[in-house]
Length: 149
Image 1 (cartoon, rainbow, N blue to C red):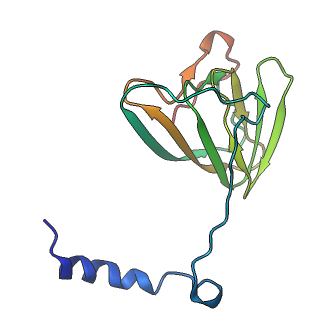
Image 2 (cartoon, rainbow, N blue to C red):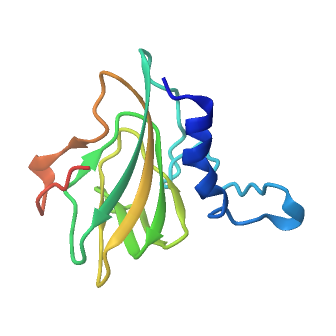
């Protein structure tokens, strides 16, 4: 058990790292709020079972094409740096993300991401459960190795 004063000693140095908000009040910016994925597909429901939240930081090297894959649960990403081109297997939807962009991921729809000259660094949040994978590879339709988070 962490003693309150020990915890305070650990957290106190972080106070100087915080950026003060306007008038000393916290600020909130909605980065993404969506009822449908980036390709226009509406979200239907969350999976049943024991909820499990997962937050990943992913680095995709330059000139990398991810394997075709799909997600069984809702997820969202935020691109920290670089650019990422995301497209669906049927080539009907194509989205170019730049640093600072947020994306509501597709559920059950085959897609992939590709980088260009720069690496892409992103944060991805998955709202799943303890029995489902974050991503499912569709390697039979792959044109490049699958890069798994």
